Amino acid sequence: MVSMVDFATVTPDVIAELEDIVGADYVHTADPELLIYGRDETEDLQYKPEVAVRPESTDQVARVMELAYARGIPVTPRGAGTGLSGGALPVFGGILLSIERMNKILEIDEENLMARVQPGVITGVLQETVLEKGLYYPPDPASNGSCMIGGNIAENAGGPHCVKYGLTKDYVLSLEAVMPNGQVFRTGGKLRKDVAGYNLTQLLVGSEGTLAVVTEATLRLIPAPKYKRILLAAFDSLDTAAQGITAVYRSRITPAALEIVEQAALKAAEEHLGRPVPYSDAEAQILLEVDGFDEEAVENDLMKVGEVLMEVGALDAMLADTPAKERELWSVRKCLGEAVKKQAAYVECDTAVPPSKVPDLLRGVREVAAKYDIRQISYGHAGDGNIHVNVLTDNPDREEREKKLQPAIEAIFDVAVSLGGTITGEHGVGCAQSRYLKLCRDPVALATMRAIKDAFDPKGLLNPGKVLEAKVPPSLPVAGA
Image (cartoon, rainbow, N blue to C red; front, side, top):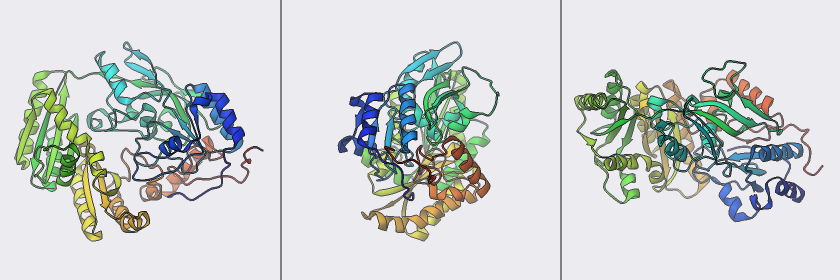
């Protein structure tokens, strides 16, 4: 939770100026719209902005930011609202700046294997568009059918296939962005190599909209693998399944995806989907995908990892022999976020540890759950050590839930950090995890982050209350002055 800070408020004359900038149809002040923009997918948090605006160009974004900066009004950038750490919640009211109208794929450069896009492009739409040209944009969060490139850049989004192909940061080559004061700048261009000065591109990726508003991105593409195969293996314990992960890596095969799901999550998926889920009575399962450009090599890799998992102690294994079966197996994994939400009030701990420490993390989480008498459901990207630990309670009172879950959540993060891990692997710090940042970052690192934030945003107006505690100098002007 963030501490309250006095910012300037949105006045009628500010609303009139916003209407002049983006058009009256794209300025929203009524509760139905504001309540929508005041939520994302983070638990049950709700913070209503004073006004929501939907610009369609870099120039309009710059003018909105310039206005807000002059008046001392906080601005919260927002993509599709699919975030899981409260990164796009307007915790101090002010202006909610939605990028949803900036949704054009500006260019697909097949010669240089690059795409130039606006931030409101849906990730799945970009993936489908480039796939038609035999190209591949790998970052694939579970929400890729609705999340936006801008939000992915803000959070450095990952997904199942980053185990082989990397995170969003590995595909962002250059950016156009707007500073909190309205100034526009670019970082690089269509270049594979560019070491002229500080790497501002990578500084913005993962900065959660606290430094600048991204208005355009040049993204790296790769040739799309021609063949892929999927295997599902069932295990009688989480420990055995976790050992299977290590065994896969020792086989010297790098899977395109390597996911682990425990029984409670499988049961939640069955309830959510309204149909049986393969191996739902097993204590855990591993979903593994291999891909490549040589069909025989892909088939051999699949057979080898299947043998490895059986040798470790898998109860059974299933091959997806049709595209329909592949979609069916992936649908189970991709629905887990929604499925768990339906179980009870929850907090999701986006832990990440070195892959070899996944067994230790899962054991530690179970010990914490037993100690604090809480319910937990774990699943995630085992191949890169990113495990989503959901702690649940049936208590409808938020304050009572907080008292019950808070010690357990901190203990879970302590386990992750003690294993060389972190408090978030891909969801971001946002406002939900900011209190825990000190668990994995030392005082010098935190002070350096603060200095960077102050350099970009000396008035503390851009997405305040995210990552770092909001900081507002006493010299801020009063709205309308």
